[in-house]
Length: 298
Image 1 (cartoon, helix red, strand yellow):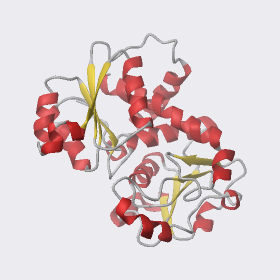
Image 2: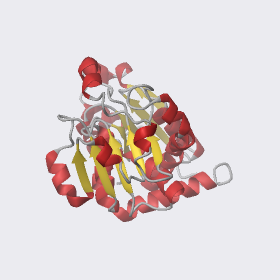
Image 3: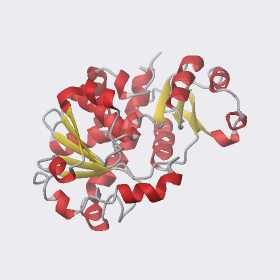
Image 4: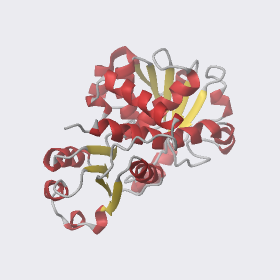
């Protein structure tokens, strides 16, 4: 039984296969008769709001021949305190796979264990692996490869996206800079495990210099709303603008996993200047998700 819960547990060759398959899915969309989910029904179980993740998975499952049920956790017995392992045991007897977007990463791990059906982590507070597959796909298409690239993540270095980028750097061997304010660095043990592939710094300009990609995310993730005022103050010096992009390599990419809050983590002008890349990145969520789903049932 295969699951897709974190890049940490993925082998390099499987990730390369996913990226190749995602490229194929994109190139042949609407032309392929590949329907690996034919006759299957998949459940989307979401505790967090979503646009790109929900739409890409719903469309992807249907394009692969399957049917989909969307289940908001607040409308299930989960919202009234039913243990995740009991929900998993029930759904595992009724549906063929599950896509889960929630807070606690352990809930996804437990669902996969007790449900005994292919399970996808569509985002937890710990990791966002589906996003990173789409991001890697975008970088490969636009820059021609990954291994020799320098990617700089700007913002909350302890967030799920940054954590998943660290795992990606460990798998592919590219250089990852994490530029973040004091108190928002990634897990120390994880950075130590990554070795020289990952550098953490409070010096935004030094991190951006010579980068192939500047990448940012929202400063206030879902569930952190009560920290809004303090976070806005602490991250104020970590905005990506034209001056920062000028420090990167000529032709460097600006990437954002969206939604973007213009005037905070990124300026309106620089986002619009790189909108083609950013919305290509968003579209690639569909193709990456289809690749992940196909791989799980292969």
